[in-house]
Image (tube, rainbow, N blue to C red; front, side, top):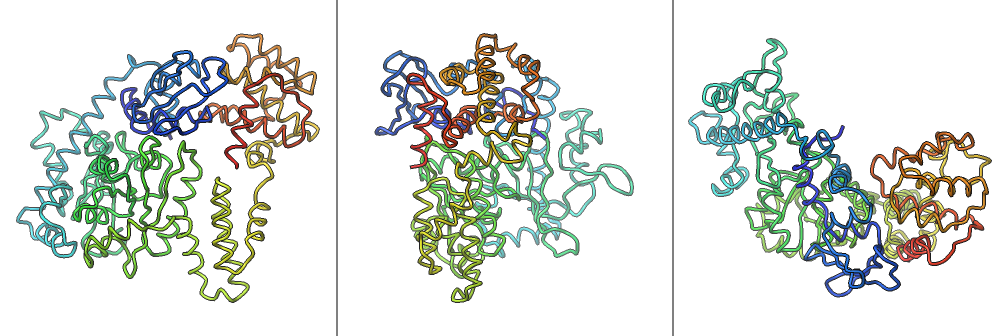
Length: 591
């Protein structure tokens, strides 16, 4: 389900997550020149790169036609859409849906007021839990002692992270809110349905009335980028059968866990000055790291790393080393490999510098920092190994006897699965060589196995496999590719895509006529032509859902053209078309 937000919130998230270089490089081939980048300007017939992109200033400028602006101006001019649509589409990529979805004037005041109320209640709850930690209740004193003695946290660190404690009571927080804040919070604080929306209360199975969700646990506030409390992590202090060690807030209208990172509100500025990010697993790993001066540390929120979190970690205009610091156990190594897969799924304007944290003789960074000096950690971070080499090394270590052929074979199969994901062919070759040395195979053998695992055209697995094309007409791939181009004409209002397809002479005369017919129509009428055409079965090409999900249409165009080339299509390209530029981009990306 999408996470519903107001337009103002969506705009804020988009500005936080995207930058001008990552947006322009989706559509144009960019080349680095000093601190800036250049590309062929799409707003005039550009024969040499005259569009300059400044990641630092977040602007572009064409020195030939004078086109200039920020990332939103580029999107609106390039895609011929409104500012609202640009924000809506980018927000959709992050899993956000704008409430009402028409324009800023339609933001629902009731929704805005309810969200403000949730922020306020969370802030009151945070203060309540923090005060409990210093109360005279025996269990609270035990909690404070645990933080200081067992976790080696200073008073300053406890206060900086605003740690607290929930009492062993069914209604301590609820009574506090209703007794002291009823005037400020209004009637909603007495309504069960609203109380459950806060994530702080749940329904008692026996009585059916709201009761405190968190009881006798250490409370760790989770904040958004603007330092507002959006949720809580809660750690148990006693081992109770059936009770999880950590019990976190459920998702609410202000909290979607896969879209946030713990301590990002504190770390974001330090990641810019230090030019690195340390991604850890646990709350206390991060808290301990910050206490020791590693203030660029953050953590996932009880889930595997998501693409939305990667978008927070990576910004092409802020080159940073990203160090993946997962635990040394098997679950931690599985999380590392899963995270590497997420990074490969996303396209970046500049390749992220991914490292892996290796800590000898300890299970996590929290334990390391308690045992050793922070200088030792800083040295380890400075020399952190390349993440893929580290992941491969861990695979090798999982198989004790690599002299045994069966063990070597299993290690090789796992290694190939990891290397297969990598988009950069040069990186693949380096890692194949690394595997060859450690597993006593020839590098060419490993590369051959990787290539066998891949389709000849990496895009064909997306466009032309049996799932994507369940009913091929005459089993003709060329027709499939040409139909893809016609679909793009029908569903995309992008004049650059239209110009690309216009310059392609279709071998199938019926499709050529259909293409020319569509090009002569207003965009609003194009889809109806396909629906009325009996020979063009819409069920055979499931591109509509991809378009609705906001998939990059230029990527689909590139895939179709490359497929036509791979099957030696006699399609003719006239002039210096956008199609030829896309082919050049594909080749440069795979060299």
